[in-house]
Length: 247
Length: 164
Image (cartoon, rainbow over all chains, first blue to last red):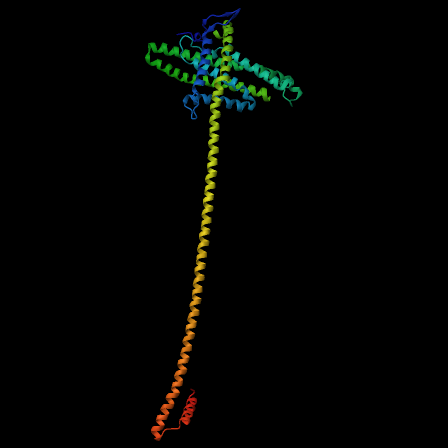
């Protein structure tokens, strides 16, 4: 049975170095490039006909567009319009990372959202971006995030540390949620898949049980792949809302 | 776990940055404006069609109103024409009746005059006949002709006595 951790191993395909910095083109990087290509091809080719009554592909592109636009409108409001391309890119990048990770792609098959450094990279951009937007819009008044107006002064001792911790744990919770979901899901798939092989190879009938379970878990994992992309995006929207409107 | 191996933090972050920026640029410049344009165009077309539908509906309602107005106008016109014609006919009949009545009255009057004259003439003849008869009767009874003047006065007296 293959080690279920092995699927997360990064394999450099083209070793590159700029000075002391290692920028090797790895299977992870290859999947990122593949995602970007597929997203762009999908979104541009599907609306090429500019049909009034959309076909299947155009419908899907429009659904993604309106889904994210609606999410941004509902959670941030009209001020969020200029961040639409970023939020949309974020959603598509995470969604395609999750979904392509479910595909048995030879050589480069890999789930980049299962790597905490990748999810943390995105979460950090969201966190830093939101904080910058908050200070740019409200100046030092943005510090009120940590001690809301109207709260009794005596509560400051408790309130400020709690608010600080909750604020600074945002990028970590955002990053760890996605990374952990993807990692655990893929480990379960691999382990159950190993059961199917080992049991099915010797006793055909017992292999059916883990295979049925594997099928169910696969469906569940596809659901989680989409759900986690949604959660990552909507939390980013909520943080953006806080930065623009405060509490 | 390979996730916590810092060896590949740098290349992953580098490629994440590169691919994500590329994706962001591609979305901003190429994909999103295209989809947005399609959606806007559809919304505009739907709005246009709704406007057109509302306009056509208003036109249809105006046409119905005009039709009904024309209908009621022509009904009123027909009514007035009929009334005029019946008035005129009634008037003509009236006049004709009057003229006929006048003519009939004249004819009746002429007839009555003629009857009176005939009656007078007849009465005058009665006197002559009475004188003749009385003369003849006298001659037969007496055997000689009676005096004409006396006979005539006697007849006149007899006629007077009978109210004629």
